Image (cartoon, rainbow, N blue to C red; front, side, top):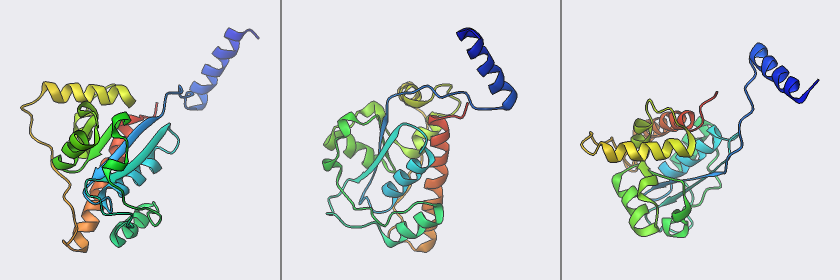
Length: 202
């Protein structure tokens, strides 16, 4: 069988068997989540995205705008992480100043202050920095994925400056168990949507 015939046969088997077409290799995406203390929202978001994109070429990290030292994740983060299928027992907080955000392809915060600090104090690119709910909304109905999708979302944001501001995901610290659960579930929902937008199954 000729080379052309082999490739045609593979394509036919893919269609008949419903197999996924081979993914084209791409460079690794660097994604960093940023919250205030790096003890609940950002480590949970990073762990959930790493889990959702384990078959993709992605490196996910997290950091906080405060420098609290190498303290562990909050007990509530560990508890809800386990509930959602990720292990945060080994997590240790760190400041955005200890992470090179200049090279990050995507920086995701939960409040405007997180994005501003990442850009002003840690060198993150403004066009690659978003609040998590904001990026999920900007990705809506976009045909592009991966890095192209991030760039398209940035252009859309710049062209729609009058659009309604996206909601924040507030810090649940001190607000009780219900707030921790609702925050964890909201992050899980948005991260699942983002993973599907960045890497749609073809």
